[in-house]
Length: 79
Length: 239
Image (cartoon, each protein chain N blue to C red):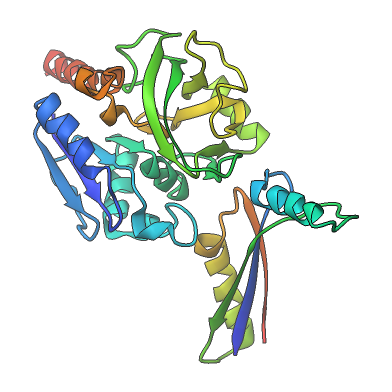
C-alpha cells in the first residue's frame, strides 16, 4: 500500500522556480505555455491497515509536516 | 543575562552567535543541543542560522520537531525572549511562534551580501535602544528568505507595529530595488503578538564588531540586554 502525495505552492504564492522553467521551455521553442508551477511528489510505503484510519493519519502528516499550509496546498491518494 | 544557543545538526552560525554574546557582550552563554528537553536557566534563547537537518523537506520543517524546540515554545509561551536569526527565523515560522513563511528568493539565487535594513519600531525588547528610521548595515546569507504571509496577516503585523525591520537602500528608502529576496512589504524581521519572539533574516551577530566591517547589529543585542535590566529594575521596585 502506498500513499502518493502532491504538494504544490499556493496560487497566491510566487513560484520563481516555475517561472524560470517556463522561460527555459520557451527558449527551447515550446510555445503556448500558460503557466508552470513546481511542487513536490512524495511516496510513503505503508504496511497496510484500515484505509479510513490511514487517510486520517496521512492528512494529519500533510498538514503538520509534509506541507506548510501558509504557502502550500496538498492532495494525496492511498492505493 | 543568561543566553542559550540551540545547536541542530546543520546549524552553522551557532558559533558566531556564541562569540557575539559571550566574547563581544561578555554574557554567560551556553549551547543547547537539539536533543535537550530543557533550556535550563536561560533568559534569552537564540535559534541560530544554518541549514538545520540539511534543509530537507522545507527550511526549518524538521527542526521544529526537535525536543529542544518544545522547550523553546514553552519558554516563548511563558514570556521568555527568543531570537531567531536566518534559519532560526524559518524555524520559528514553522513552529508557529511567528506567522507567515520564508520561501525561495525571487531571484532563485543564494544571496550573501551586506544589505541595509531600517528600524521600523523601537517598541520591543529587540530594538528599544535603536531609533525609529535608523538604517543598519548588516549581512544576509540565505536562499529562502522571501517573507510571505496572507494579506490579512501583513495588515495585522502593520497594525500591531510588529514589523521591526524592513529592507531599504542606504538612505533608508524602502524600495523594490533594495529588497534582496522579494519579501512582501520589504519585511526583514517581525515579532510575535507579545513581542518576546523576534525573527529576522539578516545576521546581527556577524555585524557586532567593527573588525567585521559593521557593528550595526549591536543594537539588537544591546536592546535585549537593556530590556533585561529594565525588567530587573521593575522587579526590584515591586519587591
